[in-house]
Image (cartoon, rainbow, N blue to C red; front, top):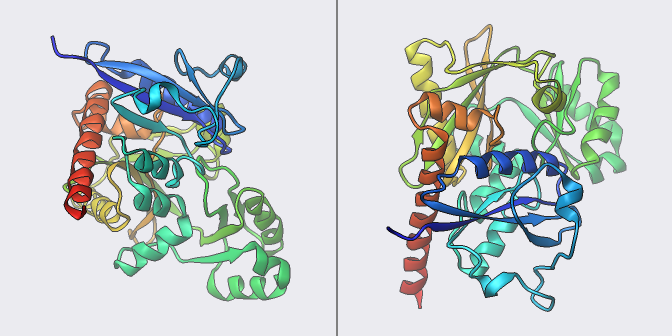
Length: 354
């Protein structure tokens, strides 16, 4: 019998999405095939310390009990001098995990890992940069303005004038670097913009202000490295005005159409746009691409990309692959294969440059 592959799940982390990471990691752990994989667990505390634990859990008190170590090289290091696992699987949502930081650490360590590299992760995390890149590639994005906290503090009146000239109501204001709908505000009156910006600046020094699109919210799962494939698209049908944090993870009243009821031509268009966005933003391994389908014009807009999408029991990424013929355990196996494939390719490039 062949040796099992040792996979290290990395979860928790310093972002506002800490709890969501625990839920995702628990679902991933449960769905790995125990006949093929030995799953090990590395928990990152809210303070950024690391520790090996028996398994992912949503019980933060238990996870944080006992000693932890720093990954800084002059402090106590990780177990077994880096031989803790054959491949690493970051299940970290938001900053300090989905933004290229953990990917950079793993690149420096020279170990295989699942998902996008440093560039793709950083671009996917920064919504303002991602939209600029997508726009430069000729892909349709919602009209937007970027507001930096320093500019807002220096001259709020000038910022308000710029936004008023560029974007009609309603508006959505969100932190440029965050996910899980944290820090998002819908603005229906110009007087509400300052408070919405203040909320966004609590999480990131750059805010994104977007034109509100009346229509359907679609999501697509993409899988692959240099030749990515797209799942069937799904639809999010929010219980509230938009799919906010409470609706995603607390109330659970949002409905999903998996797959979405769309004409064949629209389905094909969504899948083509999803793959184009994935390539434009240098994604690898996996990503969920989100879209708006405008009601009046029937125009599709690429909203954003998530390079470490949710893996909870209600998350669209695994559900869309399941309905497309790839169940959760096989999806995880494929992601590990893609991580090894990418590592071999990177290693060959490094060796050629020596």
